[in-house]
Length: 229
Image (tube, helix red, strand yellow):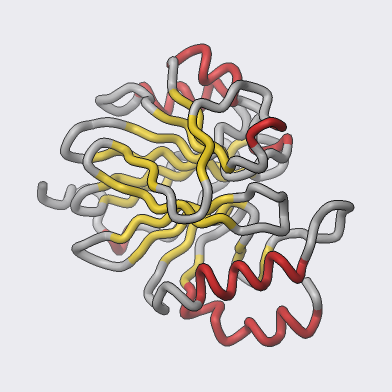
């Protein structure tokens, strides 16, 4: 399928605002729509397989009406909702979206019991989640929560795209200052399972705020380790 001229790669910056329109990125096989929802500035990502129209939502965080409108603005329904981790600001719209769409639920095995809905598929390191003809690899990143996961799409016509939840942001790893969290675990997993695996062109989409690339962040890994956050 050819690229939609209305959304060229140069148009996508990864910057969205509260109540604003989605940022749309058209890849040859996958369309990515990013919106900011809720009072904590959460990002939600609607992924659409361009060959089949099947859709997957990453983090039904908040504003269920707005997320339903995003889904209905496309040609397909919602087949799957993946929750990157169990924190309340990432699951605020989950129950309502599941009730409205019948989507199957996917989450990291070690976070699944903390979600407000039953989890249909519990995943871990090396598993795969599919949306139509597109496969997304699961990366288990321990430390922000025990079962935090990221999703990796290795675009055969371009670079890898990572959906990192609250485990990796521009400027550092996710928060690890609360009981039960571990900076040592998170920086180790992010280093070994992300930076040691994927190249500098890899683009990542975090749970809050703007996107970045691994190449932009890699030089700062020693600084993150030294400061401990």
